[in-house]
Image 1 (cartoon, one colour):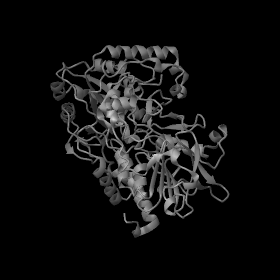
Image 2 (spheres, one colour):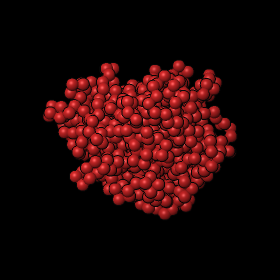
Image 3 (tube, helix red, strand yellow):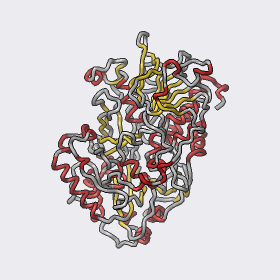
Image 4 (spheres, helix red, strand yellow):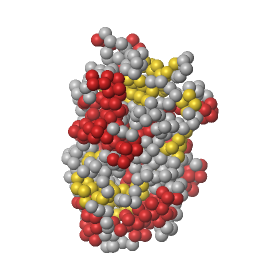
Length: 594
């Protein structure tokens, strides 16, 4: 049986399988409106003789731009470029519109737990022993995340070397289509008031801006709990110049190496039936392949295509196109820790709405109401089998029988708890610790090996300790206790509950909850804000062109050396629009019309 837990554990800290009543809901009768997105089709409809939807109009059967990955950056990028040029998007997943686990807030945890071949999320386990996921769906991470929308701060924009005016024009372009103001649940209001009580001030109200203090941010869930993703930004596209192929898995980028510099000519991809195709770039000046496959997929694709560390490519017998030791390096993830807070009040489901942006470089948020119930989720421990392919990248000692037994024992304890409450989250804003990504094989469908080195740098660990102390004050504050109607608990009891409930594969010190540092190490999880692998100045130039080759860019979070704002999706979508406009203006000047 496929793994049914994975990232539900990260956000909810509970084991689960997918025996959900959601599968019986009328939600699964969601319809995809083909009239709005006439340019989306399955990859098997592609043919060499008519490789473009423009062939029938007498235009070339090649493309001005081929975008690898129709994700959080790829969709707004493609929509923008299609205003003036022919664009082909190759997305390895399906559409989000008919997937109830993607579309509805109440199924958020089910979507993350689904690791079937058709799932919108692809699970992986870092060598640190922490569960994680990468998106596999049109719309990318915006289809499986917690929906919070908040812009980057001005300092990030300045460090990135971006045009602040264009940035401030690009954010609203996204916001008009898919972003909403949330209706605060009582728990989120309690968090807001408690943050202010313990000194995370001032209260900045509802705002998209990144400002210190406590605020309410935007969300891509509307008032009916329906998710709106980056895929809907394709509504801005020129349908006559855009083609989006789903279930199109790119195998490699093709280069002409006969000249002084490698030159991209196209890509090879396989369709949902396993057949291979080659899509070609136009020979017109300015035509490019653009990688938008995310912080895992983009460095992986560069290496599979022959750009990366020479020794690693030789080990896997991948023909070397360009040696670059920095591909896959500088990987980072924002470590997150949670405290489980019980409540005697009924809990309404909510994802991130309120955030505390502290001056110590820590963010405090909350998720509520996604607890376990006999009607929705059942437990399955077979996922810990050492035969499970997800565990092929983790150290052997973490997959031994004693680790499996400890995992099962911890989660049986939690299963017996009729838990009703919240998960208060703290995450580090700017982790210093860095890791790396490397290939395990040449199969693009398999996850590479990823190491983030959580808390390897002592400063990161110390900041986590300070963050847990802050969260401890929040959950025992007068405002919070007034809402939960619970007695003021011993903080160490809550920490102990969190250690026992939390699911990762790291060794646990369940009797050492007095050590905040140990708690940080034991309970670290991800909130999917990993980045790096194709850093600016090492793999790409400031305009995201891959160094040393022609006609290839990377536009996604793999180029970031820090995660922007409290949650990166706003800035990643903005970057897709921003870079699309920049590219059009470079090629057409005032005639670009954007």
